[in-house]
Image (tube, rainbow, N blue to C red; front, side, top):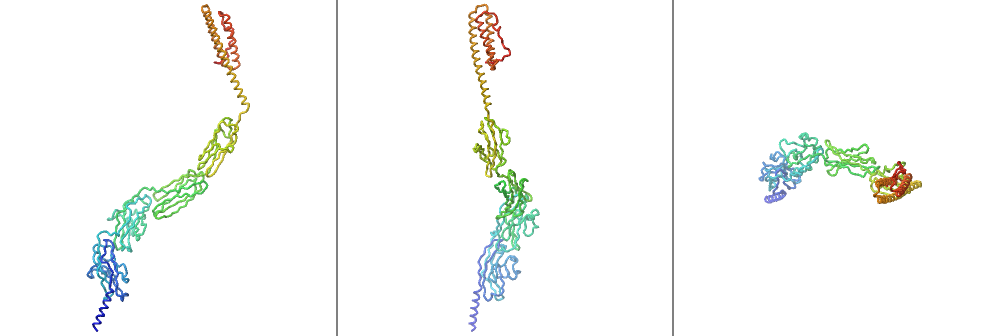
Length: 576
């Protein structure tokens, strides 16, 4: 009977033994400075399900209680080097005994095993152990993504993008973020930003610097407003977990500060006189600190209303200012200026207004005197008239007379018309038509032609007849004189031959010279075309003939052949 009872007890113990089980890895590899997690799931007899329990992790493989790494009920029993660094990631009631060790050091390496205690009777050591291996290299979980350098403009704002990684076991741990204005951490390194205590920050950066993201989301991006020249330099980020590790993320980011050159942009629009137009000025920035101010500088001749808006597309902020106005032709060439301003710097963009408008101020001019929109031109002369107009775009100009196009030009605000040798038939109105895509305008000028009458033609013919008569008279006189000269020379030669050896030879020569002088005087009279000159010439001709006759009749006469000559001293004679 006793033997049977002992057998049943052994079977019960064997059955219970089958319920004490654990799933745990043999080895775990971690890096120094990271977090280590030893996955652990255990089972126990079902009759202990509702019993309180204590979970203990030991850092040995011999069951020594002096090397406690974690104690769920009394942390004072833990080794000093593990205190505040170990905890369970799950709930013991759910069979989760996974151990987490943060900020791993080299001496944390070694064997680890788990023990459960329900009461003094029901306790169990889950073996075999798990060996933790610690690498001296830096954990790959400590990473950051920041640019090597950032260039910003003076007066604007700067953003240093930053995203950091850390061991997953620290995910729920409270932390602080610190930015240093230095290449690396050193005693009294200048602090640019401190998420917990702003009193540690540099006075020149205080109230101008902040984080643009959430440290819990791994966003450590830094934003500095109203950038100054002295803000240039290196910046690096450091994370500090409370009761845990801290880490400096190197290398530092170099911040460069340049002159402010960003300008606003005025969006071009078609501007038509008389139609309302909205001109937009925009300025884009990625800074969400101090907002820039957009203003319009307009001349008094260009009044309008202004409205400002702010929109965001991704990380870009778009500031817009809209100027609404109704332009007129007098606004042509006026300038508008859009200005963007920060507390210490500003820039601007200028737009010259190009206003489109229909033709206006059409004028017609002429070298001739214009009276009451008309000019007087003498028949046969030339008439020149010019048409000009103001418009944009330039107008197409056309000159018309009696619905007939006389001249035309395209895209030109001036057109002239010349009428050569104008006749009485061309008297009338001349129209100038100016047209562009916005309208049409017309002007006219009357040309009055002064025609020549019959009396003017009669006088012209009379003058022409007198001129022709005088010309013919002169020609015949010339022929007569030429004939007399030829006759006189022949007679003189004959006399010389007959009387060559006579005593009165010298007297004959003298007479011949006087006769030649009279012939010269006769030649002069041929240039005079009036009646008195003609009569004198006829008289001279008769006397010359008489002299020649007398000379032939008495070649030896000593008297002067000009003794009976009546010469008019006051007469004017023409030169042949």
